[in-house]
Length: 299
Image 1 (cartoon, rainbow, N blue to C red):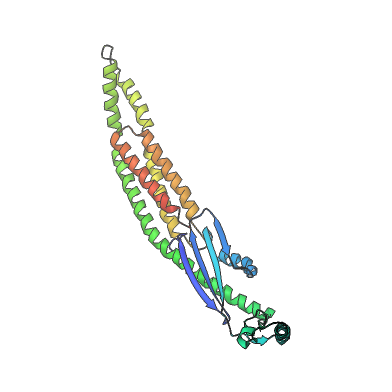
Image 2 (spheres, rainbow, N blue to C red):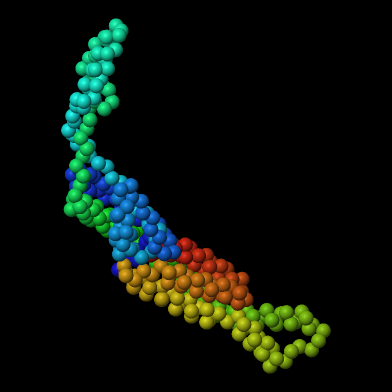
């Protein structure tokens, strides 16, 4: 299976008639699975099952999930508070008996707070709440499936980029191997020139001693071991990408492998006795760092 990225977004909406709701899920890279969940007041009961559902399908990443709920307003029954109306009329009659005021109008009375009352909506039963919660959780699972698909699509594009970086590293490794083969002759010529400058007034070294000194320098500059390990790391990286699956996230292993790549590139540069080989080593370090930046987003 292709590798999965930790970047993705999905949105799913649902309804049970009286209430409509929307789940949004997004994720970015993270060292472990970090979940941020936001639900409206009154729906806190969904937090635990929602976190469990997220953990079932995701292994790594900083994940943000939010629920938005909108209640659809229905025509509610109203009633007139007749007792309050009678009290108001009695007070108005008393005021009119002691002064010249206009009689009350019906629409004026109806605008008084408390005269018109809306009947409270009927509370949901436990069975109705459970059915609504089940619909909301199924909608969340749909959003999570969409998020997984988005991360897989991004991972497929990421795999192409990583393959390109591995090909660049392999080409630089082969180039370094060809240049390293000539290091022995370069070291021998440089050592002979240096000894000639230092010992121009002294007897020259014997051929045996010259060979010993050159052998020591060549041994210190031998990068074949680093090149072999680089070759092994390249093969391991390809195998790691092939082994990626939802139950086998490879991001952490790949990140560790990048550290090993960088270690070999550093050692190659430190052992180099040739400017051109050093230049290749620097390019190799740059390619490894570019790959490592991409690997940070692999699940």
